[in-house]
Image 1 (tube, rainbow over the protein chains, first blue to last red):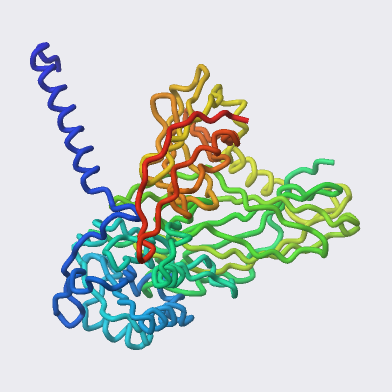
Image 2: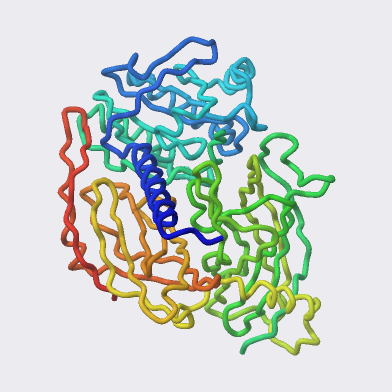
Length: 207
Length: 314
């Protein structure tokens, strides 16, 4: 189908504007880099209460994206690694928040009551688990995997973004827990030596 | 001496997920296993290296991951049990496919897939007779959900001798390799494309490495899959190959004070075929790097702008 020159020009212009708009929107939604302010959020915990990131102003916060249907998450809990990290962080005065961005239409989705049971059986030691079923918080941070860890410093900036540790296969006895290393550096007033790593695990099951 | 490809000699001894996702994800449907694997002898080697293959079949819709799995997933790995002194090289992957699901980039292999591994002989040479190769494949397979597991396989690799003395079916082994061999990346020299001087630019949070392509087929280059880089997080969604250049955004694990990587390697797709490309950044280029971010009162980190510089290919 042939368009008159003017119509074609208008269509091309609209397409260019649309593409530019999409690019601008994508840029506006780009996840924060290390050093950037941590995106604000208010999410409900498994008991239905609201929790905002701002509630923890002045504290170091660890965000752990989680999904109990993911075998990598299961391994970290069944081996006791995640709970040990959560307890160690808590003892240092750090707030550890688990975030679940699994969409309700996915096979891995579990209702809050069931999540309570699963994580209680695993003896999870996070402060609260937050429901992010529409994925708003997950997308704002650029959370890609379960688990995926973000450490936020006391000034509210992202200090670490990546994997929980350097042991993708779960066979390294001398593993480095990146989340705790970042926490320790922040508490010591030192730069975080490793501030970004490739997270590994299942994809976050966004809507 | 190059030996003719021969086949899979022994079936899988064990195949099944060691850990499981949802119960319905443990099997591929209709009661069939989600993943089965066989060890294939592609080249018996003697006296040189042997070439073995792991031939994997997946239930419909499931995929495994490339060596760089993308934004999520895990690449398969292998634990080998070989004659004393023999050494397994890295697992070679065929060219992956790229998938984008809900904004998450996945570099993956669909069913079926062959992985290759070269086995170097012991210093004293291969045993006089057939020798056993055993492997445990550790894998993560995903469809809607994911499952991890281990599958043990083994094969009897023939020693020196006429083909008639070797166990197994030559015809089937040859067919396996002839079918899957072309799916592995080829030398770049055959692509009609070469890489020009590279350029790395600090964009405030990542090194943006640009590799210009030259040659008559440069316009046919359509994608680039980056091999994992120690010390860097690959921004897989930002990796692109268009307008005759490759762009690789790389976030340094140790912050903005880090120099760009010494080299970038991966698979370049030209006319739908994968070619190995490795580009090195000159040491002179690496001397210029963005200023290290200052540590705030609590180790707060900051982004800082850095210079643009040209890098030369080695």
